[in-house]
Length: 260
Image 1 (cartoon, rainbow, N blue to C red):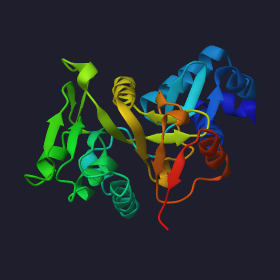
Image 2: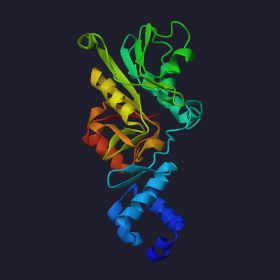
Image 3: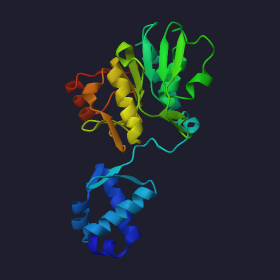
Image 4: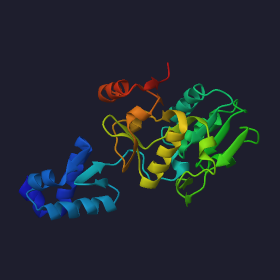
C-alpha cells in the first residue's frame, strides 16, 4: 500500500488526509515511514494540502482542521448549527447578571448571545465583534465599546493588542468567548494566532470566562491555542461532551451547562 501510494502523489495525499481525519494529527516521520517516502516529500505533501485548506500545518506534522471553516463569512456561519447556537445563546444569557461588564469576542455564537441579552439594559460590553453594533437596537446595553485593531472583513472582527489607557482601572466581570475548537488535550483554539492572543487577553482581564461552543467543535483542532481548559469557568453548549472531553473538563473544574 505504501509503495503504490508513494508513486502517486494524489493518492498518497488522499491517504494522508484519511489518516488525519481519523487520528486528528500526524507527524512527518510517521508519514514518511508509512508511505516509504522521504521527510522532504512528506513536508511538501503537507504544505500542498495546507495551501488548499485541507489541513493545518503544525511543527513536525499536521492537524485536522476544525469543522468550523475559518475562512467562511460570518453571515454564512450564523446559519451553521443555527438552532443549537440559539439555544446556547439563551442559556448563556441566564448566566449573566444585568449590570455586569462583559468582554465578547467575534463570531456567530457571541453575536447571538449579545442579542439574547435584550433584558440586560444596564450591562456594559467591550467587543471586537464588529457585526454586533449594527445588529442591536439603541439602549440594548448601557454602553457598547468597540475594540480597535486590524479589520478582518470575512469574519467582521478587529484584531490587535488589547490596550487601555488605564488598564489597572478596568474591571471586567465576564468574558464570553466563542471558539473554533475545544479539545481535551489542546484546550480552546481558533484559526488565527493574533486573534488567539487577543482572546487570551480578554480572558485575563475578566473575573470569569464563559465559553460558548456547539458540540461540532468538540474534539476538533485549529491553528492557534487560546488557553487550556483550566482557564474556563463555564462551558455553555448544546449537548454533553463525550467521555474524554467530559473527563478533561471535570479535571479542569469547568462547569458544563446544557439544555435540560
